[in-house]
Image 1 (cartoon, rainbow, N blue to C red):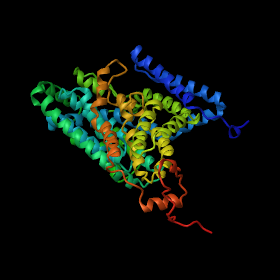
Image 2: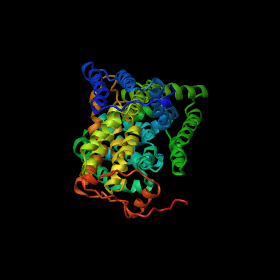
Image 3: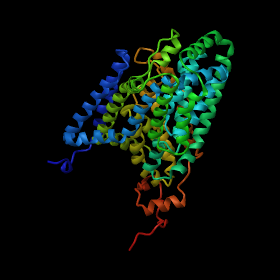
Image 4: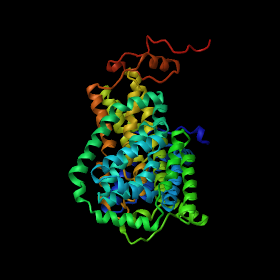
Amino acid sequence: MSSDEINPRQPSFGLALVPVLLTLVVLGIQLFYFGDFTPHIPLAIGLAITSLVGLYLGHDWTNLEDGIFRVITVSLPSVSVLIVVGMIVGVWIASGTVPTLIFYGLKILSPEIFLAASMIMCAIVSVSLGTSWGTVGTIGLALMGIGAGFDVPVYWTAGAVVSGAFFGDKISPLSDTTNLAPAVTGVNVFDHIRNMFPTTIPAMLIALGIYVWVGYSMIGAGTVSFERINGITEALDSYFLISPWLLVPALLVLALAIAKQPPIPSLFAGVVAGGAVAMITQGASLHDVFGYANSGYAIETGVAEIDSLLNRGGIQSMMWTISLILIALGFGGALERTGCLNAIIAKILSKVHSFAGVQTAAIATSTATNLVAGDPYLSIALPGRMYAPVYRGMGRSTLNLSRAIEEGGTLMSPLIPWNAGGAFVITALGLGIVEGNFQNLLYIPLAFACWMSPVIGIFYAWTGLFSPYASDAELRDWKANDRAVADLSEYGYEDPLKDTEPAVRPAE
């Protein structure tokens, strides 16, 4: 029997919870009982459990495999970004681009404004590049070095970097997730971005205020060892040629981003430019550049802060993260194909009938999908498809939904360590969680802009602020494109399309 002829049963809510709960139990054992932060095998076991549930429901392996690899395929562009970012990190260190950024950062920035400036810089770069991962792996890495020079705790710097980078990703029209959210909810991408501002701007302003306060009250120039800063800058100056010209690779990437070129070619152009600069200014050979791009950069300066920061990069440094992402995506694909995620969401929808409740549930569902499936794309696409008819049935603009799934999907992704976003942040910023530096997970609550935005969104839902009803143009679009509208008449909602003419009448 072909997979097209299969008619599997849909799981009950109880059965749908089985693979989710068992996977969380195995994850808990690995992370908290064994104290081993390698979630690969627990997620692989979760994939196997989900597959067994699928076989029990009547799926065959070919059908399950198709669901698993379909989700993996959708996310391959982001895996490609990881590979290119790994190359950039190794080559830009060798070229002196990263050391130059650190050198001038220590000379120009003050400890008091460092965290606030880090968030702003990452936000600007991320809006320009359209990729939070590219921002974290480039400018974010340099900021980690500057923070080390100022003796700022690693987790504070990482929190500021993540806040800025993922803010920019959320409102950049070049970002894949920023385009995915409106695509699955049927709204215009620029309308979606404008509708993000009521939550994004307050969250960023609050985060900025906290970082300024921390800079002046907890860090401050008085707590900084300038002898230590001088030691770092002198070591950088002795091992690398330091010059503003070495910023050309970074400026090239920014220029290509401003010119609205695709992220992957733009980042790879940065790799090529960095390799050329490494050969011209630092005396590297072409073979050396190939090695830096593949295996990363290695140096022994005798200054611990420099050695720990600059011994990194290369494609191979990303393999731990890429393997985790692929397994997590496969697990998410299996949960979707077996209908387990649909059953859980359907159960939620059967219990929630007010707009405030649905908006809260949409944010929570995206967050939970991120937590369980480890995939920001699935956490946007699945709730977006499932909840959209409900919003339409309430007569509410699906702009509310696109904002909700961005907040629970894009912004919560870096705060979950085994999620694709969290795994990348931990690897790219060198937080050392795998080596047992669990205190660096404090970056999660300190990434204020990421978790404050959904909190503000929930507040708006319950107060009615910035929670628009569908416009006449949107209603006409629903009718013209025959978009699904849930019948919520039993809960007191009238059909929003009953008096609406379609935007375009179908041809006779």
